[in-house]
Amino acid sequence: MVSTSVPVSVGTDPRHGGRWTSLRAGGREWLWHRAEPRRAGAVPGDPFADAGGLEECVPTVRGLPDHGDAWSRAWAPGGPEAPAGPVTHTVECPGFRLTRTLTGRAADGAVIADYRLSAAPGYRFVWAAHALLEVSPQGRVALPGGSAGRLYPDGGAAWTPFAWPRAGDTALDRLGPDDGTALGAVVDAGQATVHDGPDRLRFTLEAEGQPVSVALWRNLRGFPEEAPYRSIGVEPMLGRVFDLAAAGEGDAAHVPASGEAVWRLTVTAATTP
Image (cartoon, rainbow, N blue to C red; front, side, top):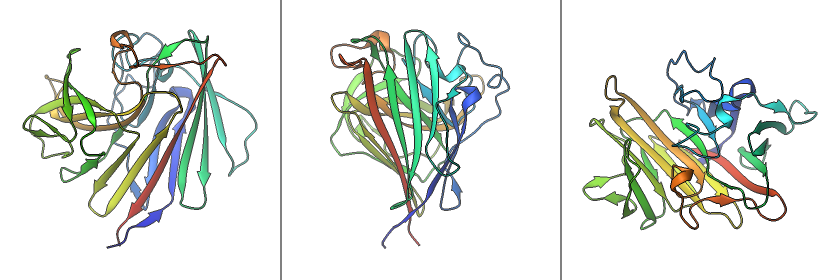
């Protein structure tokens, strides 16, 4: 059957890290949430407080600072905004400034997020749109077959190579049933599509001259050890590693001679009647 595009709408919380609190399409909320009382009071230097939604993680994901500098800081309005026009916010962090502008596209209902990171030329960073999704155990994620990937066990810095979608006996594209495992992966791809029942959500990342990838957090009630829960992350990413400190040549994004790195994330959705 033919899928039909449906409009995407986004809600954000600038006071708390610019976090995306809602990602709706076709009457469905795609973002997963959990009660986490530490999130509202988080300040720079705090351990990551996993409340779900989509967090802006930069200049690293794992490592220090935990999940980056931006998620724990307030973002300021970036200029006058019309009710239906672009929405711009900026966050100031040690060593860099990040600006995000959200715009709707009428033709297909897409939401477009344009980013601009200003820093000294040569500044290296990793960025991830750390999206945790409400997806059933029958859901799956589609990436280009055969794409090179790096598989990380939970809590481990070392990775092993694989080719999407299989890492040994594990089919990483399948998002359930819950089996008590928790795995992270980074795949060399600029687009990821999540399928769940009749619904489809697609992330497309464009960044000229930068390494683009998709990070996958496949927690099937394997994390944390003392009280595991289910959480599925499909995370468009600049860079090829979770921890900036572990980035080798070509594994991190960089600020060019202009002093600004720019990239675009496009989110589209569709459903099959």
